[in-house]
Image (cartoon, rainbow, N blue to C red; front, side, top):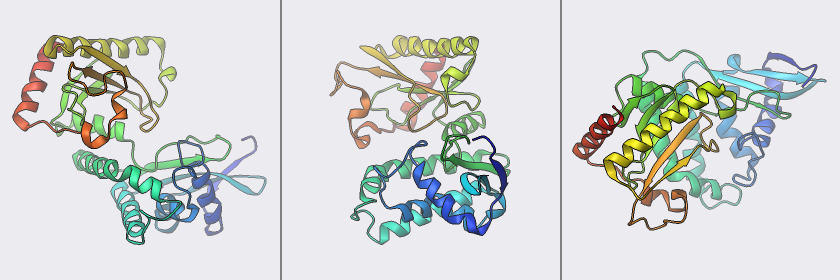
Length: 290
C-alpha cells in the first residue's frame, strides 16, 4: 500500500471502516459466505470502536480513500461485552432464522459461550488491563489482520502463568501446555507458543526445532501415561491465529478412527473431567514430562 497515510479516524470514515470489516471479516477474506448481512456484521465488529472509543481508532488513507483501519480499546472487557450485547440483540430480532446471519448464529452458538467464558477468566487473571490493539483490517493486505477481540492464545498463556488455569500442565522450552476442553479424547493437550506469533514459518529454525521438541515430549508423555493407539498432531491457525499445536491421543473405542476429531460435533467432543480426575491426570502428565 505505497503512499498510504495513517491518520486519526473521523466520523465521515464510518461507512468505509464498516465496509472493510465486512470485506475482510473471515481471516482477511470476505465473510459473506458465513454472515451475509453486511450491516449487522459491521455493527458487531466495528460499532463499539467507531461510536464509543473513536479516539483510539486509526485509518489508512490512500488517494483520498480509506483503505484500512486499526482499532484499539481502553478496556477489552467493555469491547467484548458490547459485541456480545449486539449479538444478543440480533438474536432477539430473529437472526437465528434470518437469511444472511442464520448460518453464523447456528454454527457458533456453543463455541461463543465457551470462548467468552475463557476470555473473561483470563482477563480477571491479569494484573492490569492497559489499552491494547483490538483489530486491524486492510483491503489490500497492508495492515496486519488480527482478531476482533484479544488473542485467545495470549490469554491462555497469561492465565496459565498466573496460576489460575486448572488445566495447566507444564511450561516447556517454547510453549505452555494445557489440557484441551475436549477430554472425550482423554489427555488431549494444546501447546501455545509463549509469545504471540501467527505463522510457524516466522520463527527461526532453532525455535521451530525447540517447539517441535516440546510437541514430541508431550506425545511421549501421553503414550507412557495413557497408552493410546495413536497420537494426532495438528498446527492449523484457521480460527486461532496464535501459533499452537494440538496433540491428540486416539483410542481403540474412537467412533471416527479414520477422521480428524473435528468431524464430530463439539457437544460430543467437549467433555469436562471431574476435578479429582483432572488433577490426577495433570499430575501424571507432569511426572511423565519430567
